[in-house]
Length: 238
Image (cartoon, rainbow, N blue to C red; front, side, top):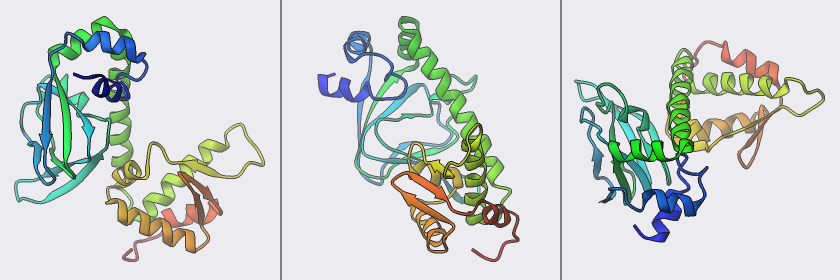
C-alpha cells in the first residue's frame, strides 16, 4: 500500500483519530486487497457472508435491499472514504442485508475481519471508533424507521427540522432557528428514504414558500409553527 492510499484511508472515520504516521505503522504488516469496480457493477450481493471490511477509497456506491418479488429499495449511498457495513462484520451471523453496487467507477480496499481485530487490539482509538460507528448506524436506522410513519417527504422533512431546531434552542435565546446538515445532503436523503434529487426539489419548494432558507449545509427555519402543522397534515399527494 503506497503513501497516497494510506493518507486516504487515514481519513476514514475508523482511523481519523490516529496520526497518519502511526496509522502507517499499524497497517504496514496487515493483509489487505485492492478491488476495482466499473460503474454499474455489483460490489457485494445481498445474502452473502461479509467476512472482510470494505472501505470505499474512490468513487461512489449505493446499497439496495430487494424482496422475493424483485422490488428494490435504495437504502444508502456511500462516498470516499466510508467503511461499508462495519456493524455487520461482527454480527453473530454476518450476512449482508443489502446489495452494494458501483454508482461510478470505484476502488475499494478490504481488510479481513481478523486484521480489523488486530488493529483494534493495537490501538483502542480504532476500537472506540468501530463501536461508535455501530452506535451511529443504530441511531440512523431507528430515526429512519421513525420517519416512515409520515406519508409524505414534506412531512418527514418538517418533522426532522422541527426536532433539530428545537434541540438547537436548548439553553439559548434570541438565536436564529437553524439546522446543520451533517455530514451531507446525500445522507439526509438516505435518512428520508428518497433519492438526492427528490430531496432537493422538496427543499426548493419549501424555500420558495418562505418556510426555510438554505446557506451551504445550514437550513434556517423561518416559521417553526407552520412546520409543526405540516408534519400533522394529511397526505395530499406530494
